[in-house]
Length: 273
Image 1: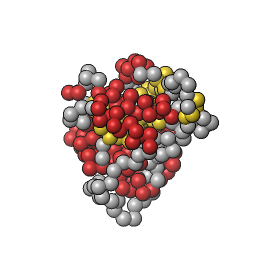
Image 2: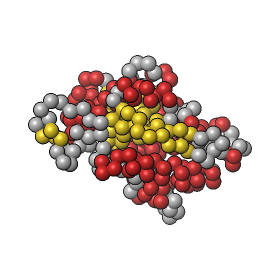
Image 3: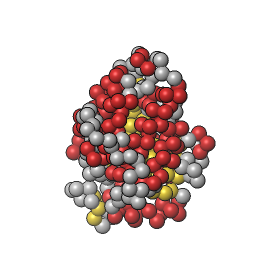
């Protein structure tokens, strides 16, 4: 998402309750012709595009996958939450994932592999973001202004979101709004080692390749850097979250499109035979 705008939008004071996550369960995530073409291939490979009604299951899977991730605990384990119980921290961790998943179901593409939402990937397609006011209210993201501690808010809104937004713009340059963005991908422990993450990533990289578009991600796990490397991603930069005693390192990685012979990329990222 456009994080600089989102950070500003999320600091507004709500005058009325946000629409709850059960609103309009018949709505589905947005798609474009490229996604529709890949959907049939995804079905045969065990990959599914999730619908809005599946927000809670997808969020539960990601919460489990990111339970000990330093990027997630960075907002919860602060000096001013020392009196919080582990149950309270976990509940907020789950809520954050629910807000983020719901926003991506509204404006992005949420892909899953495995029989029990074992791996879930949150993708933001080219030209899309989730920083508009309606999405922020409908997803519940605005509630983080009141649910995070004071230091947690500073870390999330004043450090994390602007850092990711500015870094993505700097690394991708004029392609910033014309690339696929893997915002989150996680595999719950019971589903690891089964190739689910590869399926979720390759489902979209195939679409990106066909359109001649790059894919972008941030990773906070050193082991994942090797996995992403095998899928064509290259590290372009390292950034740090620095408000804690122990800084959190994030690898910035980009995958360039792999073009088939006889295919030419147009000036706007389109493909010509």
